[in-house]
Image (cartoon, helix red, strand yellow):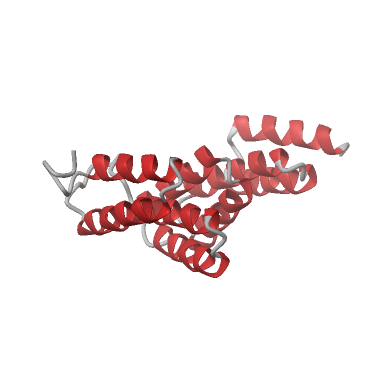
Length: 173
């Protein structure tokens, strides 16, 4: 497929994914590096376009699978930095982490979104998602704190009140 259109992001991602699944890390890495170049050119402006942070996350997974700890860490830091450059980029990165079940990394990405600021709705959304991740990690007390912070941002949101009550019950408060 890539011989017909060597810049087709979907084909490159599929090629990288198949190679990774087969344990052919060199081929997967090559496909993802090529994909990263294509994505960084930014020709696809759609909201659902693949983002550089997602490709960097794929490269991180390859380095991690090869036990290349320093390289994996460096790539992951680049992914976080890239995700912080743009709201769409950040949300796509969060989506990739969520899909992969990377709760600790997702929590870090959400904390980064909070640190960058943004509108009340975005802040409350990040806090509610943080609370959900914290519950999944068995950190109910921190989840309650996140819900309460979300309430301080959007005090009139009935759904936030209900979520905070559930969190409070779970922590015995």
